Length: 515
Ligand SMILES: [Zn+2]
Image (tube, rainbow, N blue to C red; front, side):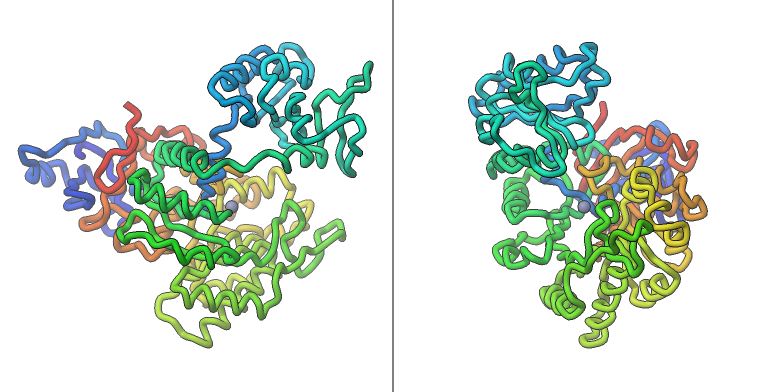
């Protein structure tokens, strides 16, 4: 490719005009002139016309299978009427076998011309034979059709669960299909799990969307054992358009035994996660001092000894040790485990990683640095903790100040890697970069565009011990490249997410092109 603005991510030579690739590797990076000398008869030339090339983005935390499942749901977020909602449902009914559950998301009745919440009767007229569940955009309310009520065994006699509600028709007293809060579980628990074939199909769809977003490698955060066979099948059937680094929860480590990638850089068995605590939003992240309302301070999910033993087991298997730790008490325990396993069996080149490391303090930051721990964050999760969850209110100003202090971590020389946590948060790495750069709460912790790019390229590659083959644009590395409509360092930070991904290249092969 030639005639572009190539951001190499190599400090000594940050910019170039052209890149030459042969097979799956980069063979030269330089000026248009230098690269033109390599052009032969069969060379395929991509004219960049001034567009910007960056190393292919690496998403260090994405739940690919869940993302796929959700892609298969009917998107109702832009439906403006009940009629439109029914139209979309009708199309799906026509494409689906009788009896298959049809799920939808993003319902927003405030947009509806009819100015009312839909009921089961609106769904029944279109789908009498397929159970239907449509979720409100909040996820806290859903409307289901009669077939779904029947499948779940819900009748007027069903007791209303605590903390929830089952709506009834004001005149007849019949269930109208609307379930609220904990009552939504009555339906959720009976929706059948997708088959392996269905999962395979949606995972493929997810991978397509991921490369469209400019991502060339993912750290696939596995949640269920079935995903391992999906990944393996995608790989052996050559259906993976991107590179996958697999990270599994430690409780399914035994399922890894049959999981043998055939080598190469497309699929790597990566790491295993120990969950030290829960989540801030649920007030299950473990804190030394209670949340400000005094209600709770979260619990560690295992004892220190258990954590250290599991950490040792993970390292013995040759996997990356990943510990999910959100609260300061959990981060402390994670660091203790890491310090212990490092002392007992010194190993060369460990790349231990803490997922989140949200609530920190000076002492913890010092220990993270000393232990060489990599911190994995998702900038959109950071933003949500402040804007959606009101971290300052729930933790108090002092602790909120040290919530995700990204700039401080970078200044100390700690490696921070970026991910999306998709589908919980949007996929786009450009949106992630923009969010890290324009952080609103405690803006002193904003990072530069260069630093944010590093989180999604150079440092993410380091985390998976792949810094020799990816993360920057230089001779000998894999030709994993993303072409953007403009230079993220040249546009206003607020505009970064609007840059378009023009092309995604994995191993020299174009896997996505806008045109
Ligand atoms: Zn996650």
